[in-house]
Every structure is written in C-alpha cells, then in structure tokens.
Length: 290
Length: 307
Image: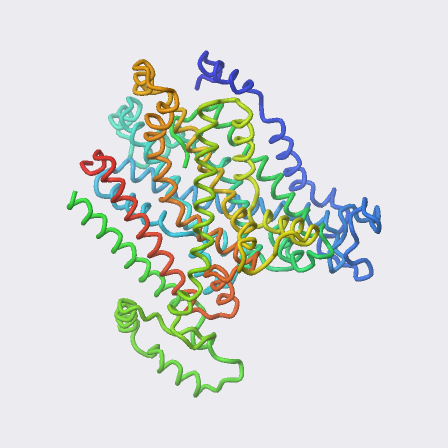
C-alpha cells in the first residue's frame, strides 16, 4: 500500500489534499461519544415519562425550558436523552447486520474463489438469484411469520446482504490464489482451510473493512426505515426510526419530534459515508464497490 | 445468441420457482399457525377445523406444496381475508398508482442524474460538479423517509403549498417523486460521472478530437454513448429492487394508494395472502426486468454472448 506515491499525491492535490474528512470524523466522534457515554451524558432516563411535562418544545422556542433542551414527546420523555440512547440501538443493529452477512459473504466468497469449478458456479448463481430479491420483501415475510423485532431485521439483512461481499472476496481470492505465497503454502503442505483463512484472508481484510465502513451508513438508513414502518424495533425501545414513527402522528404541532431523530440519523450516516469514502480513496482498493 | 437467451430464460424461470418454494415454506413452516391467525379470537375448535379443511391444511405438506404450485401456475394465490377477493386481483387493482409514481421517479432520476453526471465529468471541479457531488452525498446520506416527513412539515404543514397525502392532481406527485428519486439520482450521478470520466480519457475520444470532430459530438456521441452502457445496466439492474424498497416507505408516508401501502396495510391486518402475492409478483417483475436487460445487453455488446 503506497499511501504517498506520487500518483496518489497528485490525485489528492486535485481533490484538495489527502486531508482527513474532518466533518465526517467530527460526526462520527459525536456518534461514538453518544454510544459510549450514553448513561453519563443523557440528562434523563430515556424511557421515563412525565405526564405533567408532555410535548414541551425545544429550549429556543417560546414555551421551551432549559430542563429539556430538545423538548419532550407526547409521554413527557426527554427527546435528547432518547436520541443519545438511540445511538446504541442503531449501532447494535447495523453492526449486527454487517457482522452477520459480512462473515457469511466472506466465507462463501473464499470458498467460491478458492475451490473454483462447480462450487464456484453454484455459489455465484445463488448470489445472482439473491440480488434479484428485494430485501424489504424478505423482511415482510420474516416479520409476518416471526413478528417484527430488531432480531428479525438483523436476520433479514444478514441473509440478504452476503452476495456483495462474496463477489468481491471471490474476485480478490481468485487473483491471490495465483500468487507465489499461496503456492508456497500449498507446497509446504498447508491444509486448504489454513490457506484460505490464514494466508488469503489477511490479505483481503483491508478491502472488507473499507466495504463495511462504506456500507454501514446505508444499513443504518435501511434499518431505521424498517423500524419507522413498524417492521423492526418495537416500543418502548429508543430507536431513531421508531421515534420518527411515533412523532409523525404529532407532526402538526410538535415538529421537533420528527426533526431531531432524523438529524441524528443524517449526522451518523454522513459521518460513516465521508469517512468510508476517504478510507477508500486513501487505501485505494482496485475494484469499484457496488 | 438464441442459446444465450434460452439459458437466461431458464435461469429466470428457476429463480421464480425458487421464490415460490421459499414463500410456501416460510409461510407454512413458521411458528404462526395460519388458521389461528385468520380466525377471530372467539372462534370455536370446530371453526378452526373447518377452515383447516377448506384450505387443505390437513393434507401432507408435499401434497399442499403440489396444490400450491398448481394453483400458482394458474394465477390463483388464495383470497384476501380483508376483501374476500382473489389476492392477486386486490394487488393488481392498486398497481397502476405505484407504476405511475415509479415512472415519474424513473424519468426524473434518470434525466437529472445523467445530466448532472455528464456535466460534472465534462467540467470537473466546476460549480455544477461541486453541487452535483454535494447532492450525491446528500442523496446517499439522507434517509428518504425523513426527507419525506420534512417535506410534509415544511411544504404541507407550514407553507401549505402542496397536498400531503393521496393522489389526483399533478401536485400530488411532487413530494413523493422527489423523495423517491433522491437516492437513485445520487447513484446515477456518481456512476455516470465516473464512467464518463473514464470514457473521456480513452483513446477513441482522443482520436475523435484529433480528427477534428466538434467537441459537442465528441462528448455526446463518442464518449457518452460508451459511458452510458454500464450506467444503463445498473439503472435497470437495480432499479426494480431499489424502487420496491422506497415505494413501500414513500407510499406509507404520503398515503399513496399503491401496492407498497397495500402491503403495509395487509401486513398489519394480518392479511397474509396479499403479502404473499406481493412477494411473488414483485419478484417476478424484478426477475423479468433483469431478463430483459440481460437480453438487450447481449444485443448491444457481443462480448457477453460469447462468454
């Protein structure tokens, strides 16, 4: 990896320097602060309502109070605290999804690329078939049968997301397979599993991490929209999508209920997208991601 | 060529068959007993038994599966519990609304996306390029359901310029179509920009310029024609699957009377035959779309046929 090769520098100059995406990193900083210190910085218990102080507007509005900076919802729960705690849910779900389908995709891609032949054909055909299925539909089926929950979302995206990873890992694996160190490992008598996981996998881990960073933003949006539709997390958990769904009923007189959770999603996703794009630019993996 | 088409059709047919099978087993083998779901809470065991008989659920699983395939082949997917009509007909009645919205979205995203991508690539780092890149980033990062709510809040509730729900006048299309096309525009802009940048650097463009072809033709005829091929595949290839996802969300927010809203209503009303038929019909649509794209693509690009 030649970060500072002449070519990259030139390219970087045209793009305004290899400077890190400060905005993106700042957004991510906010997000992870919320995730890690949720219990410390959130002013209230996110699920504790106070029926004497319902739908208080944010502090800068006429009836706003300093006690609830971003206002309260229809049950008197503090919006800011719910947003801060909601970050945990969205990280949990999105990382769960990525880990699930990422590992599935990596394993299938490795097998497909390494074994080749009929195995390869079957896995790749399956991947094509999978890609033609819209994920929402599978979610509908699973949610209809098993009931909507965060688990259902993770399982659905886990089952649906693997082909992208499998294709890229397979491509990398095909070219790595021909390299001398893999041949050498074969001559030395390494088992196939060992070659796959301790010789080939470490060489594609960079690509996988970049892909995950780029995808996590999209996953957060998708899982939030599923929760918004009522197909994911159920009340009373704090989830940004769910907060939007609840606030939507009060849109005519409590605009803050639908504005701030959405802004939280935007900030988080922007953070992941900008950082992911930068990582890709810096590390410059050869293939174009889907 | 014919061999290729036949192969593609067989694969498509196999995909549809697989989906039919998966749908059958997911709904039958799930923990929820369909009869219990259908019946009102005060039903007697006798009612349950009658219903089980009526739907043939007392027969062995493989027999049920055979009947199901036979009926599916004839276009019979059971009746909707809510409307007491064939589920397929219920779905098809709501279909035109979705199709119209989808068409408007499609035209909007392709024209806007392609033109921004084209101009950005021809004049990199110009104002349009910067705005285009910003817009692409926004389109990738803004959740469409939130944008929809914000639009309703701003143009519907505060300014009262646009209708917030339903359909009828052209005004009704503005917000849902904008909302739905946000992500595709971003995607198409990015793709067409990068693909156009590659094309502009290629030898045939240099050659055309050396020959003295006017710049206008170089860009539109030589570069753009070649650059559009990968973009078109992606547009058609993913558009189907993409649209379904955002159609469900957007129709739900704007109360658009299409199939996305129908499936949400049916889901919450536990009207599973409609959900089931939605899954099947949408998959068939996406598969058919992909098949057509594959065949057209093979016509345009001979390299594919001989792979």
